[in-house]
Amino acid sequence: MDERFRDVKYVTFDLDYTLYPRIEGLFQGVRNNIYRVVERSLEIPYEKAKELFEANFKGMGSTTRTLEQLGIPDAAERVRDCLEDVNIEEHLHPDARLKGLLRQLKERYQKLVLISDSRKDNAVRKLNALGISDSFDYLFCWDTQQENKSNGIIFSYTEQRLECVPGTLAHVGDSEIDDIEIPSQRGWKTVHVSKKPSEKATAGIATIYDLERILL
Ligand SMILES: [Mg+2]
Image 1 (cartoon, rainbow, N blue to C red):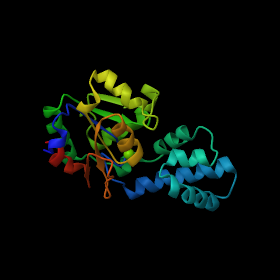
Image 2: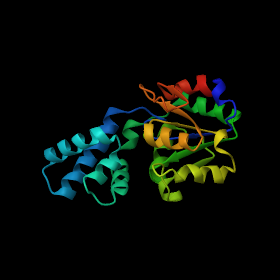
Image 3: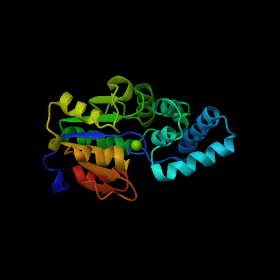
Image 4: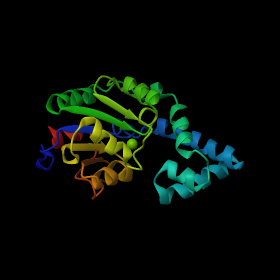
């Protein structure tokens, strides 16, 4: 147990690339759908669309923000379409080790919550594929809350729903901006799941399984 987390009573989790790693086949499937969106929206050849997206993504680090910069309308919704339009079950499989970790966390903390910018149907499909659909007390998703992480509102919504103060919350996620900077600014503790953890996070771990060392 990491002492910096001793006041934590509630643990919230990002889903994509946090509860499962960046699986190349799944990542490329989503990426390919993104290139198709750029191709269709800007009416340019596929290869050009791919080049343009990747060149802009470098400075942005966010798929939605990159599409917005390219002038694509309803960028966040298009990204959600792309996330859904891949064969999740082909790439994600039941993870007994993760399920065991979440069970132990559930015994120790008051609530476990999933906070995802994806649509709830898509999140549930992934949780089912990973075998962890009964591990969370709440699923706060884009289409159920109408709020997202990048504007921070979903984090304040979470504080209200759980009737708690920011210092008792820890968020675990892979995105340096949406999962670390934004909840940190609200006073949450944060755990960055990344090979290169952010200095802005309270703690960094290379894989989700290392959470045991921080929170148990
Ligand atoms: Mg993520």
